[in-house]
Length: 395
Image (cartoon, rainbow, N blue to C red):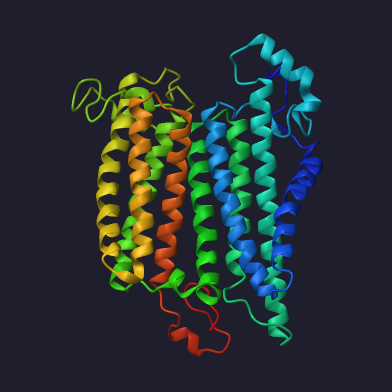
């Protein structure tokens, strides 16, 4: 049944977009009701923060989709066997499940996959609203009819372009049958999306939030924060590669692996990037030694990243103005260490695996906020009327 189903069937796209709009109406109504007496700027700030929160939830649900092997619960895109929901594809799903009871297509997995798509569409609608509202407010400000936003409308515009790219990678994840490189890029794209929204939330907080939320980080720390973000990106990439290749259980003990400090490993094939899931480019199965190399590499990078972030957290804890950032980093590092070890020694429990993905996303948000705080409120370009700072702040 799945072999004859077209990979792309755009027939249900209008219904799915409508479902996404309906989902987005809930958060939009909440922002409006909670801020109905506030200025448009305050409403935009509230919507940015809420979109960041819901995007984080979407990343967690994406991890749940992957970890429950639901990524191919519907073998086509954007719908399910050409329908907008698994309800319309009951017969096709039942036939696929009967032919392969433990296969990728079941009623439960189809619902998980489609709910993920609905939620992603809803987040996309919220980002569209953010983008349009920011440009409308900017144009009104240029006419002198309203206050100018404290950040450039190009920030939500770039975010909108990125979320569309994420949608394309989501489609390729399905149509390329969980190709590891594509799934890895899709997960990393979710972290980038969190980072873009975190920048905007931090810039809004600088203008309207409590002073403690935007206490400036010394400029000398900027290099350290950038280095921490680079290490986190490398670590997240290696973690995504472990997860998408199902290499977590290549080592089931800690700190050793397979009873050795340095087990047999095949790095060449383990990091052969462009290949199908479970296979090498020549069509042969990927070896256990290659999966071990993937796992051990993640451990080694984790040690370096953990040490660097722990030093940064300790330094921040010694500075009263940045102590809240230091506490957040310390707590998240402890969570990452605990969940990472749990994945190994407890046979990859679902809760720990999802929290491990979420912890990386939360670390991204905290470090991005630190980076934004390391920039001053003004810069030389601010002297130009209507100019902006390097981060897009209003001059």
